[in-house]
Image (cartoon, rainbow, N blue to C red; front, side, top):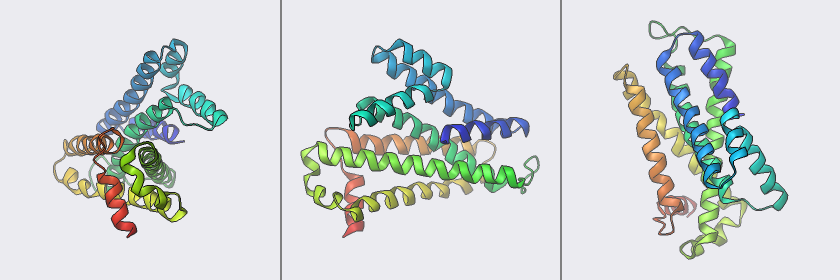
Length: 227
């Protein structure tokens, strides 16, 4: 759903001749397409790699998700797909939010029609779901896979603890919206800086929560909220 809405939003940017948003959306889709293709090539599955090229990464993700559903085990490849999709979602979230904020306030950015407004909000919502779901999956995986997460396991077996991961991820993602006024004030390059900042923050958080030497910043903050 998220990548489908990204495609619809890309079409609206092209029609409106908003080329900076078009470039960022294309970059996000290209990142996902190339990343998933390389992922499958490393796994020596050239046919699925070709499928990812033709479907912008969707085909391989669907096949991998189906295989994991049948075995009831999430594979490393599925996590790779989720991470690459989340990178695209980070870009589309900021671009959509920024486009929504300036519409009707700047020359060349007309007020959105009800349809375009609904598309923007739907895109933002699906990006939030994608990013919070990834945070949940990675936190659960690292907590139960490594000894350093042993002290959090009892809490995360309960629904309350699992809900806190989602709430924390949603709130942290929404805080990225604080970068939008700075992007607005530094047009036309501010939105590119904001997206680069968000991607760097995403990769830093990813490194802190998935490596074998785990820094546990995400889990500790979530535990403090729980307490």
